Image (cartoon, rainbow, N blue to C red; front, side, top):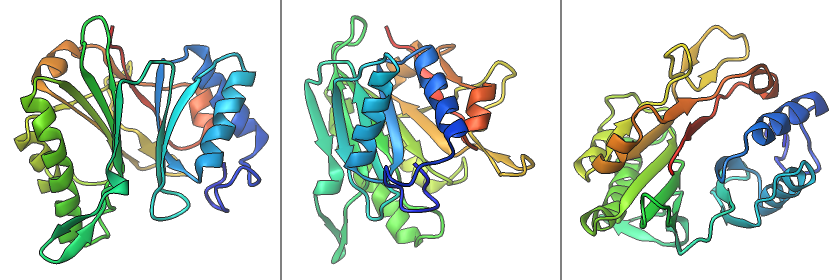
Amino acid sequence: MDRQQTGQPVDMKPEVERDALLRELTASPAELLLLRGLGSRASLRHLQQQLRDAGVDYPEYLYIPGNTPFEGIGFLHKYTIKQSADLSGQRYRIREREYHPLAGGVLLSTPTHPRLWIWNSRPPEPEQSYERRRNDSRIIAQTLRPLIANGDQVLLSMHSREDVNSPMFRLLEEAGLKRVLPIDERGDSWTHRDPEGILYRQDQWLFATPALWEFLQGKAKVFDSMDLRTAGHFRHQGVHIE
């Protein structure tokens, strides 16, 4: 969908960009897709149908609305979801102010990880107040802390333009997570380039519990291809968990 317009299915990106993205997503299809920047639930269902028409069926989905038409997040998955969580539907009060982080997770079971939580998050942008950004991360960290203490494995994926040494990331690390560093075949980790292809940055991040972090060494990658570069200015991250 074209987020420069409404982000709704009626406002589509150019066909050449859409076709390139669908080819990328269906060439080696994942069993679980984490999505951000969704215009609406209809946008997610539309993508679900497009992928089905292209031969890749994700029968289950979870949509979490954001504060604006371009901030929704979600999951498309083939797994049987044992449990799900949605922080955006809850209200947290800290010093008389209300917060509702844009984050959610699904509990899966794999042969190597019988209790595996996959979390998807879109924290506030750096232009937002420090207090809001810190408390958003604080709530997510406090939510994940009991899961980690219970012995569950946790993988947190987020879109964030924070600096790598940001206090927001330190809160997650203090909760028991370690930063996963996906790289491409050249050893680069950038996930966004500006339209002129001059400036590159990492704005997609992965954090995992220590045992899962160790398991993922060499199994986390940044995808790059001509189709992805045709589709837009973002590169995808992925992990392989048996």
